[in-house]
Image (cartoon, rainbow, N blue to C red):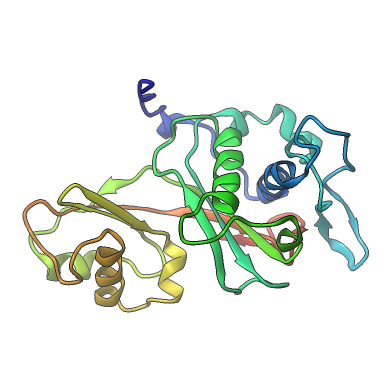
Amino acid sequence: MPAMTPPADAASAPVPPADAGLVLLPLARGAIAARLDPAGPTGPSTPDAARPDPAGPAARRTAPGAAAHAAPGVAAHAAWLDAPGASFVTLTSGRAPGGALRGCIGSLEARRPLRADVEANAVAAALHDPRFAPLTARELDDTVVEVSVLSVPAALPAADEAELLARLRPGVDGVVLSACGRRATFLPQVWEQLPDPADFLARLRRKAGLPADYWGRDVVVETYTVTAWQEAAPGVVPDGTRGRRP
């Protein structure tokens, strides 16, 4: 087994700009498309990933077969993109945001450049999420992509469950729970489906393979925040900061 790469110093890494979705969303979709394309990433060149959308100037549309390198040209020399970063890529079914979950894979620690992290997690969410069958090329055309960039997780000490529930910030905190050698996380976006902190925590424990009411001295909780960008429709990237989720 290869040695584990130590976490990079994400705390001092450049922060993605508010309009980073213009780069990250085509990057994620392109990485998936390249893996689904029978020609593969070394096959024929594909159209530019970002071209004006017929619906108007408020969005960019990513070509369905676009390769990962086809993200907007500005990405090539973006220092923040090549700095260490941790990301999650979430896929939902349907022609608009809010559809059923189709895959979600990510990193809690910055162990590689953000560019590589987004590409790897996009492919993993599409093809290797154990909860779902691998995504097909046809499904990709009906799948909305969301990319979340994480802050560094910080410990949230609590003497008991009641104190923990009081300290959690619904809608803001992503939560990592570790206990009994198990670990699980919910992104802050999950608060939209589970707004009650007690329910949120119970479901997180179940995700980790623990009893819903488990509490013990070995429980470790960390929180983080995300900045996320979501397509307005499959392959449609909102211009500027539109589509950004604080």
